[in-house]
Image: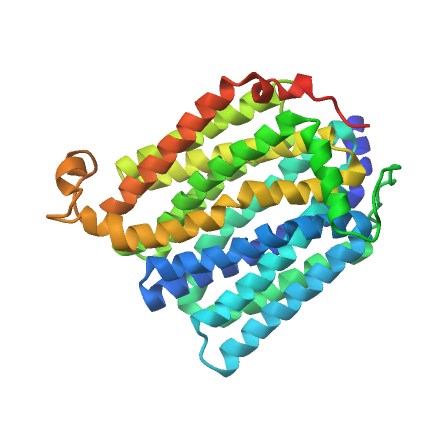
Length: 436
């Protein structure tokens, strides 16, 4: 009990921020689910749905390098406050449009783009602040708790949003999201967030590219971290395609309530994995093999769901996939927080985010175009692929989505096996020393 009390005291500032992030994540989850359902029900197009997802990630990829420099040069608390203020303004604008005029898809694209841009600055500032707010031996638990917050959002948001959209409408959800952003803003304002001690480095202060070159050189000298980046880029591509396929497929054969139930089942899996990581904190050694093994499970689950795409299989796959997600994310975050010097974490975390997520917008565009124009027509009765693959996947509505999911899952499996066989990546824990 005494050790638990000491740990809570050491992490008190983090816990305040953590509470704000949980509240904000739940609100954002409600809005994200509601907007996705609204767009697909209004348009009936996988392409339109994918465009929203494309807008949700592309600005974060493009602006992450600049955001990393800002996180390392500015006071991180000021960065977080400004980001929350912009989120409040964007959500308020969306609510005003909804209440005063007819909401259209392009309105949603603008709001989603703004939030993505803000996230590109918010994430490196927040994640690098955690390194200084939490003792090194508690980083695993702290990151597990962050995953726990996302799990709670994943569980509650779909089911609650599915009900609220049908009863109270999209406007109520936007107003609720506005309140959660304000709550997160308050927690940042009242928390003392330290800034790292700047090491003496050869930086041209007036130039943008010099700090980025410094970060790239730091990674080049630790090649295992670079290989880890590329592995996550491929894994994120597979996951992004699967995520883009989930909503259209379920809504083709069931209601938004069923979709919310499946996503909530996935949230339960994430909750269980997050609780595990919050208590355990992850391994001290052999972190990378654990992560890659979990990536192997992710690929296998996606492939299986594509092969037999029923509501039951999708629910089971969602649980398994989301259970290993906190293990992957928490373990990965601890590696980066311990292997990278604190005064470089803003830049390197931003570069990491840009590289690891660069494949996501590509996945969203490919998914929409390939499903609407190729895979679905090809897997209908008499389609070009129905004779050769129909015996394995079945023929008819939704089977083209299943074929695409199977092959991207298989891609993740193959890459994970190769990663486990490559010593520079597999043995990263021992070959790259911890930063001071």
